[in-house]
Length: 67
Image (tube, rainbow, N blue to C red; front, side, top):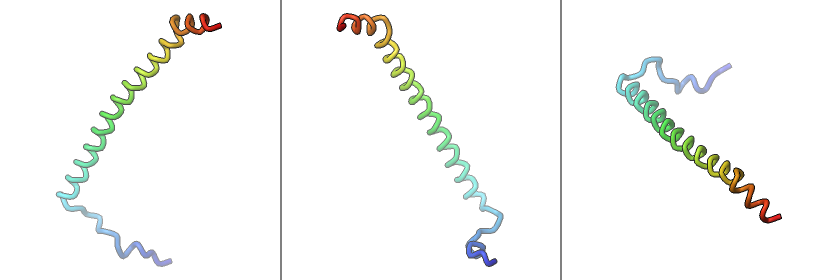
């Protein structure tokens, strides 16, 4: 069977400049995801604390007063 994509495949070697740029991009993506992970984790931590406080003693006493 004839593979059409064989005609456009690049050789196995890669120029050093392209390899360096590729590693740089991978590092940038990894660092960006680390920053996002830290801030999203903090955001979920704050949100869970807020909801824990609402359902805690103060929240439960407010719900009893409404009954």
